[in-house]
Length: 210
Image (cartoon, rainbow, N blue to C red):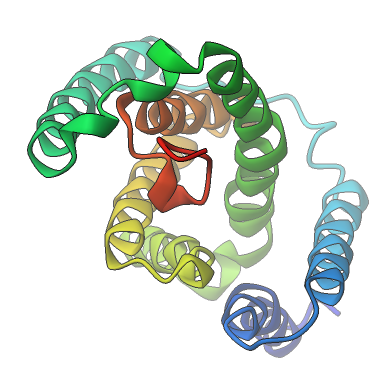
């Protein structure tokens, strides 16, 4: 089960075949069941390799906070201008008009979306598939492509672009810090901002009509 051929096949099934299959119309219960089964397999693989028992390296943590704040400010400016021009009625609508819903979204998104995604696409992916690609920049690119592919079911070109860019940022952060916690913080910070500024609907969360 640790041969390169098996590992490559596993990657294809989990990170290509499964996300693409969600474009096919079949019962949601089956989709949810398959997703939970795949996540269980990932957790089993992580437990088997005792990944979480290894002390997180937490490399470059000083740079992490500075760089993350800098990137966040850029993202905040760009997205605020975008929402203001494209759909001004959405701008900060949820936190201002539906504060309770906004807080629920942030909690659900952080713990039921961000954390599982980072466990799968960074912790498991980097631990399991690094041996397949020698070039770290190519490996980061592949990781970002597959992370974007995971959001294909939303059928939004803008989401594909956002998640690809996010995938690059998160992969690079994980490569530098080797910390699931830190990369999850970064992911949650950017994602929660998108819901706050008014881009939640494109990410399948309640928006102005929610």
